[in-house]
Amino acid sequence: MKALRFEKTGSIDELQIREVPLPIPLPGSLLIEVKAAGLNPSDAENVLGRMRQTKPPRTPGRDFAGTIVAGTKAYAAGTEVFGSGGSLGFDCDGSHAEFIAVPAEAVRPKPLALTFEQAATVGVPYITASHAIMEVAALQEGETILITGTTGAVGDAAARIAKRMAKAKVIGTARRHTDAVRLKLLDYVDAIADLSSGAISLPEQIQEETEGRGIDVVFDLVVGPLFESCLKCLALRGRQVAIASNPDPRVTFNLVEFYHNESRLIGVDSIQLSFENSGRILGNLLPYFESGELGPLEDPVPVGFASVLSAYRELAEGVAKAKYVFVPL
Image (tube, rainbow, N blue to C red; front, top):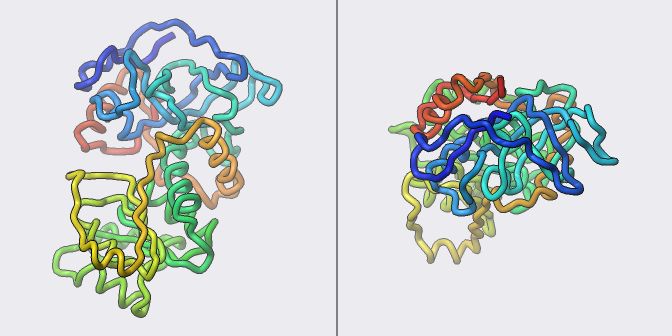
């Protein structure tokens, strides 16, 4: 079969299209014909050597949707499924290939409301967001959450989950006028914080929006210059979750203010989730995908073997023109 493959990390040039043996599923695992596989920034970072879990040679790719070729009692051959997470693409071969072997607990039936291409792009964003805000931060009904980077895939997933599942008040952020206009059209974003130059500070805006109370949960996808500002937005005993470290992994903040407020700072790395937990989270989200309450931020742009390497390069350089999905044709 054809697959993307890298023998060593360090450069996107290491990624090649290769002929490799068909994977042999272990007991309790499935052999799946990949119909579509999401392309995430972490896939490019993997090839660049930024994922400590990775053991080359490796086929990358975390998200997938496809049809079972060799199944189990729970999942018969011919069943349409989707999945993500676990160690896919890091210490076992991932989804950027014609076929993939995965443990059965990693998959769930593909939502009928989603195409293969759409189902293959919701895994990482929604598993990350759901784990971070519903499980780690334990967002509750009636609480208020501030989500930075709301216009991205993970931020959009977090906003939908917070509103649809937790029934929380959602405050998004916008750095450009066009972002603010788009967010105002969404029924799952209740208010918008203006991050453009010239606007009053983020903590001041939050104080006005919450009548001085502050934020119960901050889901910080931007970090960097917003890190300390977000901490200052927290209500007493508020929780701040960080999943990124861009561009500088080092941040500073006022420790006295932090402990007097009894704030909590929590790091989340979705790569640490097991196949079982990734599948469980997808299972919890499945009814919302079926109802249309949850779904991809945008329709993905399919890329085949002829153009997938160019898409990887765009991701590595941070200039991706669309949300790409790999269709192994």
